[in-house]
Image 1 (cartoon, protein in one colour):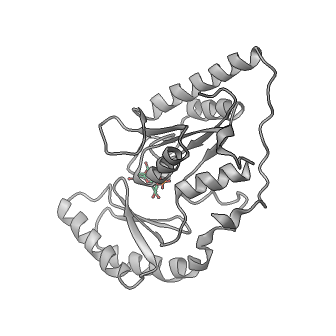
Image 2: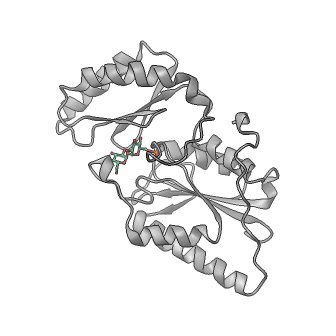
Length: 251
Ligand SMILES: O=P(O)(O)OC[C@H]1O[C@H](O[C@H]2O[C@H](CO)[C@@H](O)[C@H](O)[C@H]2O)[C@H](O)[C@@H](O)[C@@H]1O
């Protein structure tokens, strides 16, 4: 399937490259995974698509369609949520800049989870421009705009210069609900590999599955090995370079 096409690899972070843990601040990738990603990224254009905020100090690309909502998120919503969910033991708020994650993995009783959900839903009624979506023991609050992981994937493909999807074979690996938007885009393109990370059967748009991050790592290593073997028998093609100024507003 990759004959005459360039493989581009898209990876989710939490639950895909790092195992799901109770504390989001402790969701680190292992050294072995880091080196598998380096190896695969030296063979293919590779992007990590995450709803998380980038590390402080990293270069910040401020072109996101969500930027007009930034002050409402940062000056109003996050404060109201903090004040109101403080009583729910174990709940935490993660500030992802353009998206707020309300975590309940560490909330012990189901009853408290129900109360937390009700509080968040009631508060958000006052902000009709925002939506709440569910994930793995998390409620994500973000603006109702045409921006999701599927659009991010299309944006990156275009930025890499793939105007013609016949030239590209996208692979997207992710474990959560937000990754379904990217799976859908690959299904729509008509070729490529939408891969869900799950050890149990799930309703999904993905066509393939890997069980857990260790299985993802084994897949990345095999993919890189396959590419290296192939390029020793033919002349290597250089990876395309991203130009940040290309038509980003389209997405
Ligand atoms: O949109 P994504 O990039 O897929 O992010 C989804 C959420 O991922 C993280 O939360 C998840 O992983 C945590 C660490 O393992 C876990 O504690 C939590 O229960 C999971 O939902 C991230 O912390 C959230 O901000 C994202 O919304």
